[in-house]
Amino acid sequence: MRVLIVTAVPAERDAVVRGVGATAPEPAELPVPGGVLHRLSPAPPTGPPLTVDVLAAGVGPAAAAAGTAAALTAAAVARTPYDLAVSAGIGGGFTIAGPATARPVAAGSVAAGPATTAPSTAGPAAAPPAAARLGSVVVADAIVAADLGAETPDGFAAVTDLGFGTVEHLPPAPLVAAVAEATDAVRGTVLTVSTVTGSAERAAELLRRHPRAVAEAMEGFGVAEAAAAQSVPALEVRTVSNAVGPRDRAAWRIGEALEALTGAFATIAPLLGTWTFDPEGTRQ
Ligand SMILES: O=C(O)c1cccc(C(=O)CC[C@H]2O[C@@H](n3cnc4c(=O)[nH]cnc43)[C@H](O)[C@@H]2O)c1
Image (tube, rainbow, N blue to C red):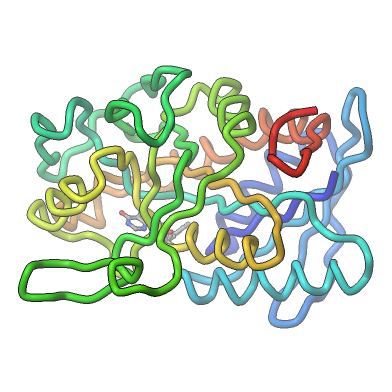
């Protein structure tokens, strides 16, 4: 099993490396076009060998897509293709749970505490999931480009409404379920935005358009789009550093979120070691 994990910044990469590396020696550093892979080969307790490469590709969907495409292509050309691409890092959490119609937006404050796990049967069409609180782990069951489209007199139109491309990628459901259950994560839609939300109004608008959104970040769709172009499944794992809403950078709990990211990947790495996919993405 070969897994590519893509973060935005080196601090996130290092947090992931610490988590995966709990059972591995020091990472080797391998150059790829435009970046450096940190390669870890943790020994899974059973099953086939696991290679995990972690890449800090930069902030935003374009940098994420470029870095992911470069790493996937280099691996494919070397005849050692990846089986899975993971977008990982910190993110903003939609901190209030409940049905879309009764889902007010947090006005800047984040309720600390353990994550509430969404029902294990929840899929993209199910009821809105639980709140993604500070420090909680979020696993995307849908990776959605939230601002890829056009403003029209009738409001926002996604590129798909205009007849182009895609705005959503769905990670393999069995893998999402296994990773979310193992990490006690909130499961739901993770939005990819090019502009960090900075107002209650914008947060409310995003939730109105995406009632199952649990978090926003800036790279997931880029990773997933690059992976889809090479028929590689994608996953997105975030830990919540701040509430989506009025901008209050001083309230971001980056250290806590990075620690949670390390903890999440210490749990996820052994799972990946035993994971294989069939063409439908179901577990074998
Ligand atoms: O300043 C630091 O020490 C530091 C350490 C690790 C990460 C950062 C970042 O600023 C990472 C930016 C990254 O975080 C995602 N993110 C986090 N919160 C949000 C949000 O509310 N809305 C959108 N994105 C968010 C995003 O993916 C950025 O790439 C700093």
